[in-house]
Length: 242
View 1: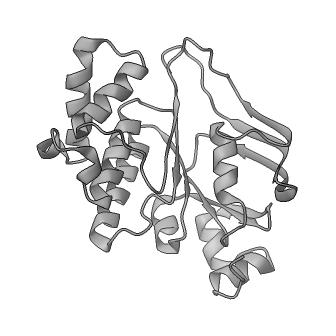
View 2: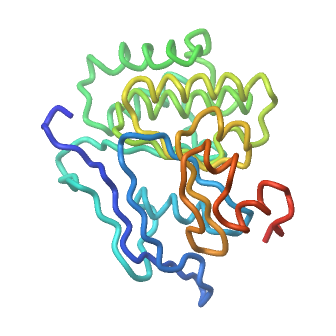
View 3: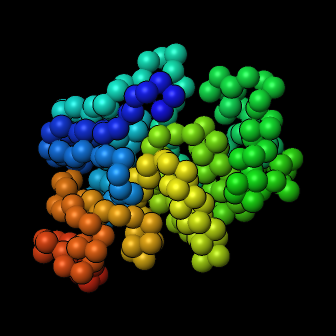
């Protein structure tokens, strides 16, 4: 990084989270490093999205600690980003969504439009620069959300089901963009229910079941020889979707 420090590793120490008296995550110990793309798998209701939001800082743990290697100071630009299953877009043009994000990040006015146009070119949306963002197709909206995150040059990007409800063609486009973001040096942490996608885009699997990390292993190990009965049942489609 420009300032010579890194946010990573990100460490969760005995993190638990409860809502309305219901325990969602229990005693999570997890270290996220920069040297592998991480996919978080598990059945519905296992706590995956809550885990991702705790990592990003959108939620605070009920107990335990979430710790970055070098926490950011208020005057530093953000070096982490998150893209959701349903992108949150402003009532602005495609280009306007990006220039606004750059303004919030403190980028000089003269640099915003060129940088935003470069971001659109990276995801193939330059021809739609002046179209209202909210009339784009689902795949186009997700590409815009990825461009908005990517152009801010995050050190780590959290993705929550980035291709849910997209057709195969749009899914391939999104996967290609995610791979390019990884190739540019950004750490990828993603939730997906698409097991093929996890195999294509991840190096390691974190398997979450009933609010705990049941298994963590390489992609090859997880899919060929899962270490836990829960993971084996999940891969065979036998684990109840809670």
